[in-house]
Length: 315
Image 1 (cartoon, one colour):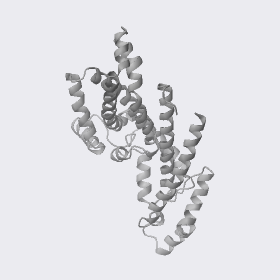
Image 2 (cartoon, helix red, strand yellow):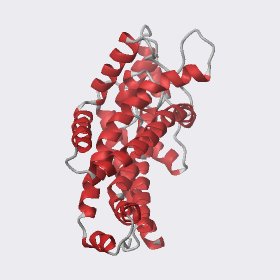
Image 3 (tube, helix red, strand yellow):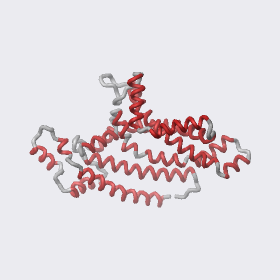
Image 4 (cartoon, helix red, strand yellow):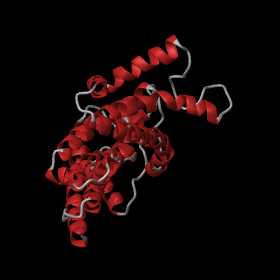
């Protein structure tokens, strides 16, 4: 196990290095640079050039990349060109907002997807299975931004129950109840999409497991249906769900980009979009590398979880 983890982390380090080069070149080759956004639009060209020289934006790409890579090697992200603040501080301020909506959506999705997937598999082709299948296909087919607009139209425009923008109502003192109201729509959007996907994966996996010989043997021995279902079938059927949970970890870094944009949620997803638009290379690269690291760690944790759930698997 120890050798496997070290080997995977070494492979991950190489992948992150390649990823950093590709993303840096994409931002570097894009039209314009951060100086045009950081300096006042009414400033003359001399002021822009002065700022560009001060921030090292006039250096060749390999020297700019070497400077950033040196910071990363010391586990530093440097300073944002646009905000003139440490990148780590900016990410620290935004991370709790993204963690809120993603953490709650994952929790609610699991609470809904697991029973829906199990019941749909056990009662295959029943009314319950047909209804959940139709609803799941609808949830999968809807783009997140379209679903978000439908929820806004229903709960905000028609019913006037919930707010649509930000984390607090502007002009009112902060309160927990107001914050929870602002959480509902973005969390609901992500929960619907995840539940639709995860319940279908679990249903398919459960159907495959329930047809295995060892399940028939357990039933023939007279074990209670509940014991057969949860002790034997569910434990093996949960493998695809573990993979999906591992792949959800990068969302904590990249953020729910579309959802955060629609609801003006001040999280990491919104940060990476605005930073990329303004060519704020240190912020874009920091978030990209963190997201890449989260992918590697998420897959590694999923592989370890496989070993815990099913001892037959050797990693």
